[in-house]
Image 1 (cartoon, rainbow, N blue to C red):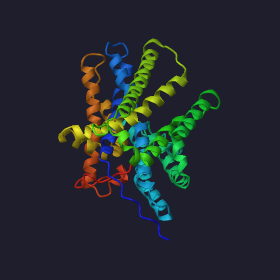
Image 2: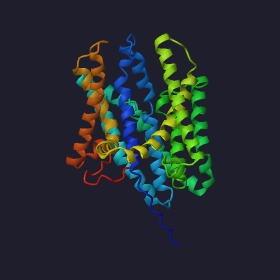
Image 3: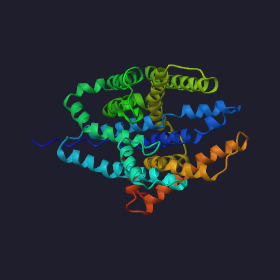
Length: 386
């Protein structure tokens, strides 16, 4: 008996806006990082602390969205050797190859640009050690974590298809594993390179998996619109957004008091507030994307859509441009010019990264080596899987 063909899933263009908001969050955190140190004695410090902490939803949102897309696209398809082989081939070519290339660029290129080259046998040995744990440069841990989840995905897909009831338990299981790992790391056995372990992000991955499976059935509970509005749904939507704001503002507050007054908080509080903020932010951004896609004019949504399409490449390359900016553009202490300096860094990272990836997609046939799977400019609605 032949397998029944999987039903064609609706394309969700709003996903690109979620990616765009996530990458803008990443860029904002990195652009404001120096300000949280340099502006500590400035009256504007609460503002810089706020944007630096409030925008810490980028990486968890990417993990959530990657899991959502995988389960949304694959769950209804029959599992066979061809599917699994194709899945791993794509991840090898479009994730691991760019990750390795940019690890080399950052590990050896940044010291060279900083006039401290390290082309030695010892450096190359150290590079391979760092590559295997996502430590070749500050932000590459995210790709390494994603690779761990890609290794887990076929197993989890098979289990949930074989035992559909397991999908009900994905979200609580994700929280249990993530915070079990947190508690062990804090109070028992310290893990080296904790941030490079996928266990730190299980709640987001399993949340995306559950939503990807159930999305066709619960779409009307997710998408905020007049047509979907009922008293109960409005209450749920309000509770989600309120939980996000409460956890995010609380997270901002403890960082402000710790940074400005030296207040000591239990490390577990940081973990809980960050986890809640990022968890609810992922869902809020997902909901907001439908509103923005429907309500914003095309001259706003089209650039955001493009940024979302190229977000993986932008993520890989943006810190290279930030390094160039901070190396060659002078700082201005805590004068009013400092605000323009930080804004300029954010704009330079965004525009230079965006243009670099977009031009690569248009003119370089083998651009996937650097930036993964790139959409063809002539087909703006083409799906991506990052």
